[in-house]
Each structure stands twice: as C-alpha cells, then as structure tokens.
Image 1 (cartoon, rainbow, N blue to C red):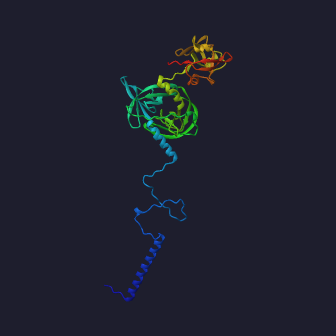
Image 2: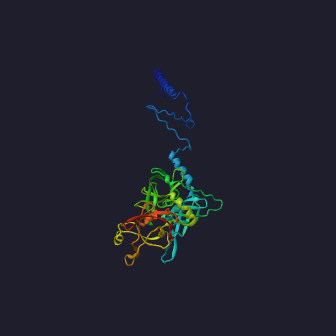
Image 3: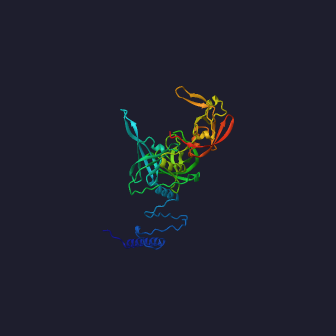
Length: 409
C-alpha cells in the first residue's frame, strides 16, 4: 500500500476540484445554447416547420423527414394520371390468329399480330385500324381487368385504314367508352397522350405533342390518308389502332403508323384524325362499309408515253376511256374515247380508248393520278354533285356531275 504525504493529498484535491468546475462550466454553456431545455428521446422530438426564412451563413441545414404517405405530384403529372385513369379501361388489346400452311400444305392457325383499340359503344363496338385485323381468322380482345373475349369484324374502310369490331360483354357488365373529341380544333404544340400495347406491353402510356397537322400519308396499300396528325408521342408496333388523346381524355386520333428506319419509334408517328373516323363509323356499323360517290366512267391515269401517243397537251390527269350509256357521266356531258389502243406488254396489256376528255380537277382539287381522284371523292356520297374540270382538245371546260355509287369490287 502506497502512502501519500500531505502535500500530495492537497494537490490531488485541487486537481479534482478543477476538473469538476470545468465540467460544470461546460454543461452550463451547453444548457444555455439549447435554451435550457432538457433532452428528450429522439422519437418524441417535435418537427419544426419551415418558416420560409432562408438560413443564414454558418447555420446548419435541418433534415426533416417527410410524413409517411404524403406524396406530391406536379400539375402535369396529375393531368397524365387523370387521363390514364379515365381512358385506360376503355382501351383494349387486340391479338389475332391467321391461317398458315404447314409442311403437308395443310392450313393451320398461327399467331397473327397485336394491336390496340378503343371501346366507343357500351354494346362492345371497338374502333381500330384495318391493318390490325386484316387476314385474321380469329380476333381476341383483352380488357383492363384481364378478361378476354372473341370479337368479329363489323365493317372496314380500306381507304382510311379504319375498322370496327365487336365483342359481346356479359349481361350486367358496363363498359367504359372513350368520347370523341374534335381533331379540327387541334393546334401544333398541343399536348397529346397515347395508350396502347407496344411490343405486347399492355396498357402503356406515352406522352408528346402535336408536331404537325394535315399530313397526307401513303399507306402500305398505296392509298393516301388525308389530314393525318403527326406526333412525337412514342408509337411502336402494337400501338396501332389505339387512341391518341387530348388532356381531357377525349380521342382526337387513331394511332396508325410511324416513320422509322429501324421499325421502332423515331419520334415521328401518324394518327388518323378522329373527325375522319366519326364520319365513317356510323356507316361501318350500319352497312359494313363506307358508301362513296364515284364518276361512272372508265378512267385511265395518264403518263408521258400515253399522252405523247394520244397527242395530248398534258401528261397528267385521268383520260376518260368510256362512258356508259344513260349514266350520270353521260348526262353531265362527259365524253369517252373513240379509238381503241393496246397498252403494255403482250402478257400484261390493257385495251382502252383515246380521244376522250381528260379530267384535271374535281371540286377544285387537282387530279393528276387515280390516288388524287379517290382522295377528292373520299368524303363524297352517291347523289352529291361535284364540279369536274376537263380538257377537251385544247379547251378547258367545267361540268356539273352527279356522283354514282362506287363499285364494291
């Protein structure tokens, strides 16, 4: 056991007292800086609301945890969510089966394509593209709840690539539909949204803007659809037939095709304007087709060689080969040719007549080709009257002509 002298004991006491004094002083300063409040458990600490005053220099930023369940969205996000929730249940996914030939040259069903469609009537009518269901021997539609129904073709409009199909929902099932908007009121730069089934990824929402309006686009069937809507909304294989929507959830177009070198979206998509669909849907449901007007005459598209052989002053337009006796065209004064000629190769030749009128415009719209002709009459009905501009010799004339019904062939 070690013994301490009196001086050593006194020194130890002085040191201990000094340490106690220093600890007491530090604790007092800390209490002052904390406002004199006693410490509380972390889980009981109050969250201090932001006063809106920016922190001064040297202050320590406060980290405040968000309240559980509280999520904020931008106005644009809320708009996207609203449109999706409003329209999603009215969009269907379409799958088809086609017939193929096996090694024994027997017809066998095989998987076809996929696409999208919009329910436009509570009875189960669906609007889509014609190319989505063409050549199909079986059509299936899937709803948002996963139920699947077999559908049938009601009517098709080949010129506008539009089709109406129908499935039969069970009794008591109320289908949600998509209302039609007005494509005539669209503006370039306007926000649009698309819901569809790209690459089989069902119920996909994409957004974009109207990039251009009034685009004439040639389809794979070599017809021209007028007034197409161009959009940068991502449209991919499987989106065809689905709705292009405005921010109110109204259909303003039918997504139809893309311009791409890779087969995937390149930011250039095209949609059929809904006003075109509105015009033909009723006829498709009632007649299964669109009844269009036509000039009841045999027409030949001019080219340079035909024009040169017939000694015509123009090389573009439609040559009137023959006019049926008693037809609307004859009553209007349209004249056919008088001299028969054979055009083309020996195996693939056509006989027509030269010496007749040349149609150059219909209803004020220039007609250089048969495609122009069909485009000029696309929205005309049998019985309507149109002004037809013709070239007879070197004279330009205008005839008033009543349209006949186009042949169903």
